[in-house]
Image (cartoon, rainbow, N blue to C red):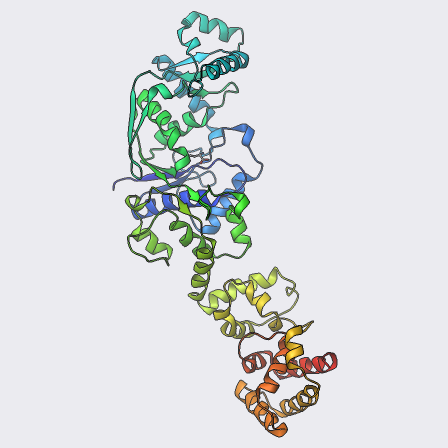
Length: 483
Ligand code: GLU
């Protein structure tokens, strides 16, 4: 495909929604696959919905995911600026052109009149409220007079009745609307700002966007856009509307049933690779049942033709699974760097752990965690001596005779020089033989003493990683506390 240019055009309403991430990702994949350009454009013309810091949040989230754009507000590009509130004169100029061509008109109707009109239409049970073209017939002089005396106005598109509006959507196929159902939409609002529809179409044209890939919620706006392209006599882009994201109960994905912001998933420790992999599968598949993907494979396989029409269910379990899978595939060194960041942000930040030590912890734990932060929670004993001991294990494994046996085990451990896990094991077996008990009678209390828990990697591995001094110290503490 030649000269593909696509854009992600969010309205900065606070955070990047996972649905927005999916739109951004599909645009990105499509651009990369076709050697095209991926553009970020901020659609902030609805001043009522403006949220301080939202643009920064969006950019931050996209950057964290690695969805790098080729043109955008912070990096510029030949079609900039890429923030709509900085392009107001462009929209006015384009709207004036439509007026000059008789395709749009000034409307001076007061909010009161419009309200009355709406009420009347409701009484008549009309399917939807529509402007009655009252101002369409004002003469040029009347318009000029009204503007001259400062009567507020909007600019509306003159939608011709009884026309079929037809467009082809890559995902939805042929879509048809009746122009009778389309209002004479406002293009420039009373505050001089363009509406979403005008700004969106003008920018997509001026920025030479070839494919509009966006969520299904915009499908019903598309006839308005198509009318605008036709009014301007501009070539329409290709449209592809992505299926809705659904909760497991098939209602529309909502905050009430879980996190919807990318930053929430990031804060919970999900890997960006897993989140992108997961989001890629929300409405697309390569035609087989492969689910684990790296970005380069997604780029290679992605096509709009394989995007589904039906809603995509947001299945958190699958995301968890993918996170685990992606984490498993990382090298120890990659995990090391993430673990160090995790430590820096934790209660263990003041402690110093060598890379050598952390790599040993990673080796022992990597198959047992689904998130990097679980190194700190599931095996906190590698970072600090246990402060408490698991009660059920204490009751089950620390019998009246245990203290004496563990005391002996400690003495035997103390004899060892720079012990390996095999040395610990041998010493434990010998101690068990001395008491004529099974090794298990010592292993469980030993585990409780040095880790405080009853689960984890092999106890001799843990002992080797902690080192003899620490092991002896922890046994002493346990002997003092567990009687
Ligand atoms: N500003 C719209 C949004 O917030 C963009 C829709 C479109 O991509 O055309 O999603």
